[in-house]
Amino acid sequence: MKPVARKKQKLTLRSIIRFLLVLSVFAGFVWLATKFAQFNQSRSTLPSGVSVAGVNVGDLSVSDAVSRTANVFQQPVILRYQGETIPVTTEMVEFAINPMILRLQLDQMVEQNRGIGRFPAWLMGNISPQKLDLPFLYSDTKLKNVLSAISKQYDRPPQDAKTDPAKLSISQTRDGQMMDVSVATQQMVQAFTSISNRVVDLPVDVVSANRASTNILAELVQSRTAGFIKADVSNGVGVYIKDLQSGQEFVFNGNTSFSAQGWLKIALLVETYRQLGDAATPEIRSRLLEMITTDDKGAGDAVLTQLGKGDLGAGLAQFNDMFRQLGLKNTFMAQPFAQKVTPVFVVTPGNAGAVLRPSLDPNAQSTVIDIGLLLESVDQCRKNAGSFSVVFGGKPSSAHCEQILSALGQNKAVGLLDLAQPNTSVIHRQSWDDYNHGDAAIVRSPGGDYVIVVMMSSDNKLDWSTTVPIINDIARATYGFFNNGQLPPPRTGGFAPPPQ
View 1 (cartoon, rainbow, N blue to C red):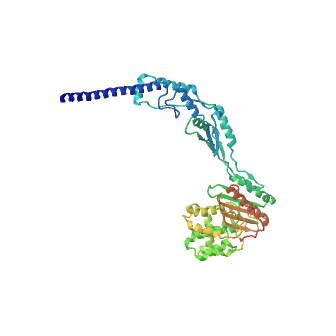
View 2: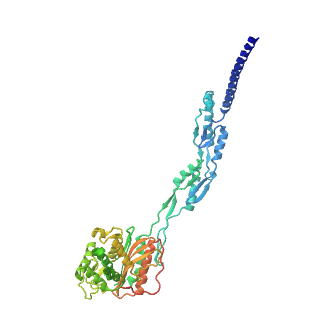
């Protein structure tokens, strides 16, 4: 009995193994049949991984794929013009997908997918993603009409500087803006055919306005001085204005000689620091300050004596030599400040033919250009640049030029070029007598730093009530030129003559 039992046990194990093998084969056949059925069904749809311009249409029928693509690209495009937002719908430009072309492309994909030979690759998942570009239609005319309307609404021409001589004003400038329609057209088409970037920052070019130029300033200055010049054949005006940043300048009668004793005190400051530098004693510094802030002629002569090592004449000769070295051919001092003897008339290019004019001091002369260039040189010197560095080998030094400007800044006399404006300083020195009223300054303003020199002259004694408003208006117009049309208020009330 025992041997028989062992035989039955072995037969049962073989049966189980055979059964499992048959079951596995059957299950595999069922799985393969199921997969083939799925493949067979997919032969009428698009392969997985197909996209049209980024829209996933895999496993869809051609009709559904066309419909999905059309729906996605019906969304509006947003245009932005310098912060303004303008939505543009597909209807406005007749934008749409080209269904005929798209359907043809998709049908070809389905047809390529029908072959039974593709079953192994499909079964193994070896189907590469396929991407189609978007076939589309739009109205070029309507698209450009949309852009034209936007351009008409938002583009603006530049606003150039203009003068109003009656108000002594310069209008503010404003740059224009102009949309580049050609580039914008390309950007809009790209946006309509994109699913991820449907916002367009329109290309807007800046059209620069014609800035206020020296020609504009010339109009205002000549308009304001025309009445004075016309009133007397001997009346004259000299004006020099220079932008210390750009170098742009305006010159009116720049090389005409004028009496300039007050202005030559600026030059004596420069010569003193050039010669003495740090060796300038407290006594000399005090004399210089007295010379700048008062009309004490003795203070200037004391400084000249010190420069000549006790010899006033030698000091004066050194002083005049400085003008020669700097190329200021129209500037000189014929005799010391306090000397009252009429000197021999010194002929210069600026005073030729004017020997007998009562308005021209034979002792101390210069031009608005010479004084303007001298002030510019002081300003450049504080930055270790300019003519002093070239001609005098760095003397005076930048520190000494700062001291020169500081001394001029202590001239608290009410000047003809004064401007009570915020964040504005006027470092000036006046020069005047009965026949000449003038002022010269470095002005530091929010719109820029500049030099301005103005002199009014006549063979007849001048009236302050006539000259002060004109010089003040020139100063105001110049400030407006540098500060985008901002015009300081005019001087009001009386005017007491400052120290000479």
